[in-house]
Image 1 (tube, each protein chain N blue to C red):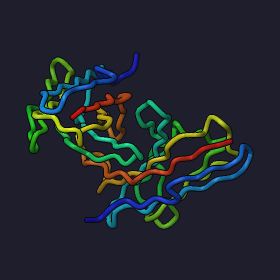
Image 2: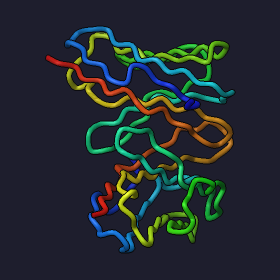
Image 3: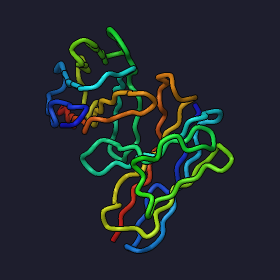
Length: 115
Length: 107
C-alpha cells in the first residue's frame, strides 16, 4: 500500500541552527500539506501545495520558515533559525486533489526537539 | 473559542466497554474526519463523512449537520484501541483539527 514518506523521523538541533524536513507524497497526489503539531494539541496547517504552487501559507511564519515543492512531487520544509518554541511534530499529508473532500493520507511525522 | 471542540479530553475505559467521543463545531463544513493517532505520531484516517452514519468493524461515526455535532463510537473496546482520536472539519480546502481525545483502554 502506498504511503507518505518523511525523513528524518527524529531531529534534535540547537536553537539558531537551520533544520530541514523532507516529504514524499503518495504517487499521483497533487495536493501536499505540511502541519505542525505541538504536544497535546491538534495539527495546525503550515502550508498547502497544489502541484508546485502554494495554495495556502497564511499560517507559515515566513520570517523563519520556508517550503518548496519544485517539481510538484516531493517537498522540503526548512526552519532557519530554529527557536525553542519550534519543538513539535511536523506532519506531511497528501491527497489526490483539493476542492473536493478527499481524504488526507499522513506520513509518520518528524519529531523536532530544539535545545 | 476553538472552531472544533472535542469531549472528553481524556477517557479511561475497561476492556469491552462502549466508548463515545464527541465533536462539536461552529462553522459550515463540507466534511468531517475522524482520525486516530498512536504514540509515535502517525495519523490514520478512520472516517470521512458529510451526513448520516458510517460503520467500519467496531467503529461507528455519526454526524448531525443541523446540530453541528459528530460522535465516534467504539463497541467492545480493546487495549489496542488506546490512542488519541482527533476530529477535523473541512472548510473549503482546509482541515481544522480538534485537540484530540486521549483514550486508554485497560485490560
